[in-house]
Image: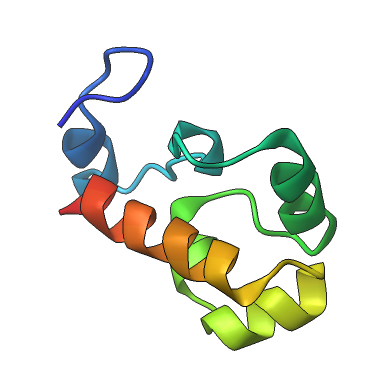
Length: 77
């Protein structure tokens, strides 16, 4: 799978590099800032928290968080 920049995402993940959440197509700027404010800047960090915790801590609607998590899992599949 390729990212917006054309890089092969799965290859970067396998060699241990962190993948930035900005590669998620359904991530708007406001949500990106809210996640960044709680220290979530990579897909690994996003997937390392429960959707409920992310929604509560970042003040993001749960359905938005579930969509982001789903997209992150697809990107890494």
